[in-house]
Length: 299
Image (cartoon, rainbow, N blue to C red; front, side):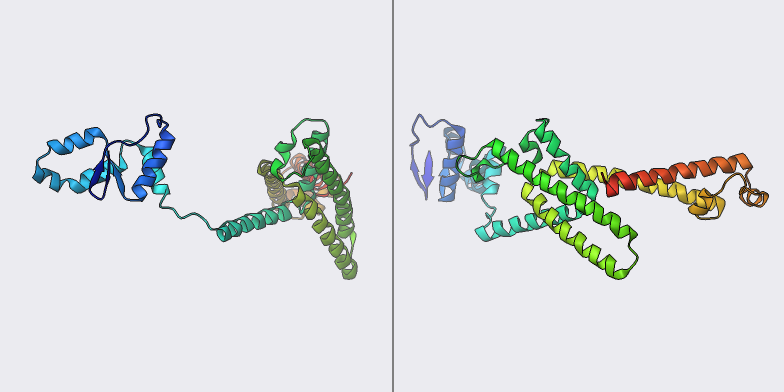
């Protein structure tokens, strides 16, 4: 039964209207325009109550009958109706913030060659059909022009990856040259060249619209490498403290240079010192491998 400003009306809903979602929409609309909906059982209970009791519990009865506590979905929809929707300007503002944050992540993540190498590695995966294109980038067919296809999108992505690989090699060669330069003028010129290459790389990477999972995987690999480097550096520092000298001088120690004075200062015998030197040699070699394979990545 419907009640509108004290006026009651019998059931007027069509019998074929039985879908829960349609009923929910109708109930929400009726509540919004001030029409109260009661079922037959609640009406009978109201008639049976004394007038005094009915007046005391009027507010409570109205609240329970309107909200129907036994229906959490109805409560959720009612509460959601109180939330203001974003305006067009608000949606644009949030979208810009998300995109700017994404660009910052890309700029920092692909500043080092490791990130670039990981991205370029997807070229062979796509070429050999080891992964689907949507596993690597965001795909929205609604943005595709007429007669565009998944194959064409895959070719577009592979061309971008080829361009990134070309710039990556130049970037690595520039990094290698920069490490050897001594004069400030040449250093500044090389740094400017690096910056230009980096901007070109970021422009191409941004056009890929890489999936977040791919980015997270690259970040995880970077964290593993950084953790390994820090662990090795701590061990190297421990060796330096052990000998009381820098690593380069320790590595120069040979049979003839392990003197009695050094043995007395370190407080270890000759064999123990030789083992410590070999351990340090291994650690430094490991660091050099990481620098070559994970930082410079020259082929």
